[in-house]
Image (cartoon, rainbow, N blue to C red; front, side, top):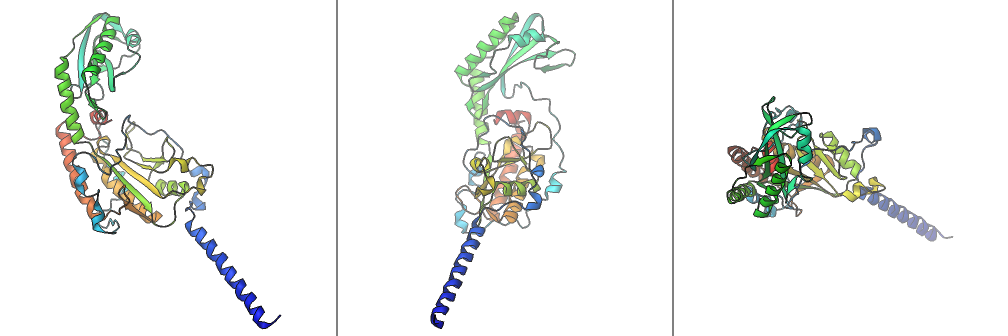
Length: 380
């Protein structure tokens, strides 16, 4: 074998080694990022838990909806070029946020004339709580609106859902005037009357129904206000280079206080009070979360969402969303985008924050403060 042939063999072997090494490097570089082994102990993985939920609170698919926030600079912000979000000077320390005051407990969690059509019901004689419960209709809705019956507890001097062992003389039946499915209509009001009348007949009582046309008009006005002051914010954090595995997403989110929710691919930042909706939610591909081998599943986008009306302003939910987005973007090498994949410059955040403050003030003036029991019912 000549020196020339030997040289060709060596050169070919070197080229083959380089190609194999390059392919291995490319495969490793493009593989989904996994959690660090030191933190991947299954015993430390988030345990699925049921977080407070609210029926009907479905994301609209827009980055911002309602309250005039659509024009705040998120949708169509690509005119700013490829500038990527910077949060310099706008960060909020989550450790400080966790020390925010907890909203005080409310008494306005039941029927309220502000958002309900209410019919007083007076019994001819005292009715036991057991008999009242047995007389309730099987469903607690009139059409798409919640329906409820309450009894007045003389000892506690308050309205409550009928309780076994208690006795009541006065009751009230009510139906919600509006929710995110629209305003109460004539058909739903008629169903409310039928249900309330059936309950009254069962306990030998006489109901006093409000005027249908007046209540339907109130419902339309309330629905108009709600539709103009409803806001749900949605941001997308997109991987710059390598995709993420579900475990990698969970590991980084857990460092910021997010916990696994009841739905696969959903994590939440819990509120400070019991029974309250989460401050914000993080979602990613549910199929990747349920994969037989999640660590081989690729997640390129995660969605951060805030339902404004469900969270009290004292918890600074938007500031905390920005902090979570910035921290995850830095830790996971991601870029914050709108739903169309356009990077969002930092300048888009300040107008949104200003609009949210105005929205909070308008809700406060209507006694429907964000995060209150009435607001959570209305915006659901």
